[in-house]
Amino acid sequence: MNNKTPSEIIFELINSKNFDALNHEEKLFVLTEMDKNEYDHIYETQKHIKKTLNEKEFSPDENLKKTLLIEFEKHHESNVYNSGIFKFLYIKIPIYQPIAAAIISFVFLITLYYLNGYSNFNNERIVYKYLTDTLFVQPEISYTRDTLKNNVSNSEEIRTKEKKTSPSNIEKISTEKTIEASLCRSIKKDSNLKQFMVSL
Amino acid sequence: MKNLCAFSDEELMLRIQKGDRKYFEYLYDRYQNKLFNFIYRFVGDREQAEDLMHDLFIKVIESTNQFDTNRKFSTWIYALSINLCRNEIRKHSNRKQLIEENFVIENFMNPDQQENIDKKTFKNEVHKYLETLNEENKSLILLRFHEDLSIPQISTIINLPEGTVKSRLFYLLKKIAVKLNAFHPSN
Image (tube, rainbow over the protein chains, first blue to last red):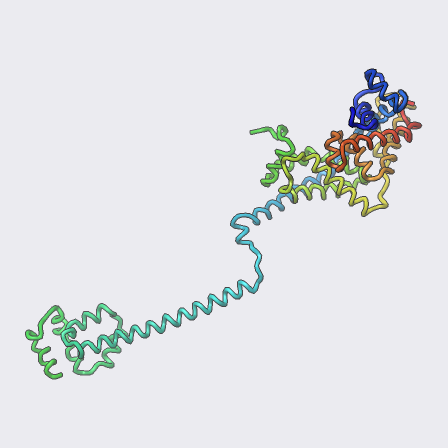
């Protein structure tokens, strides 16, 4: 009771009991502030206010609950899209960024495509050079010409190119016999080949 | 599974934070009448009270994750209600008077007609007097005598020391007692 103001103390007493229910010490304290009638009057007023305010209860419109439940679901749906993988998928970025990314990807792919085409063209040239040159630089290897040709490429394109560009004397070697000879025959045993080498 | 009635408000809020509609529905049912009557008595207009109820629960939905489950839910929601009501009253300073008929009890148990009239007059006068109070005093009276909240809870909601809440309530009661003395049913 020491740190409390008289009004606080009387309020606590009024909340719990009427004047007659107070003990002697409490009665003496109350009487220093007000008389018995005033105390009881405030006590009664408090009870009546309580009763009056709680007498009639009103209920909100039933539709309000439905609306709120819909709002609740909407809110939590949008929350799902703001978490986990959805947060990453539904990230907002300026429109220029995806456009720039698409342009860069396109340029990169086009560059890659042309570089790849150029390198294939070079490869074809090397294969052709190798096939035609072998006969002259290393005659022994000429036996394996058809084998090499088969290993490198069987495409009709290369064969056509070869036919068109190779000298007519080379073409003569390309008989069925020569192909058979590619199975490790020596120059000595092959008269046709010997004849060809001499003619060079 | 635990019965819904056994869940405290704070436990319900924990589940609502996870997005469970069932718990929100239950919490709404638990508080709808209490809060609606509180707001209605605060603003004195049914339509306005319904709008405010809607706004209040929208606020609850939107700030579910901000609610600290270590705090008391009732304290939090009454503080929200009072703020909403205050803002609304400030917006519509020319608020309507409570329709007296709403507070008339249709059937009295006591056959004494004179006593019935006294009670009726007293009730009307209580409501009229409430209308004349400022927002803070009205909050104090409603939270204490309508919502039956404890002094520490009211102190948290109104943001005043407990001692001040008690003193103010005492002086308010004293004033009302003097003002309504003539209409008091016991006189």
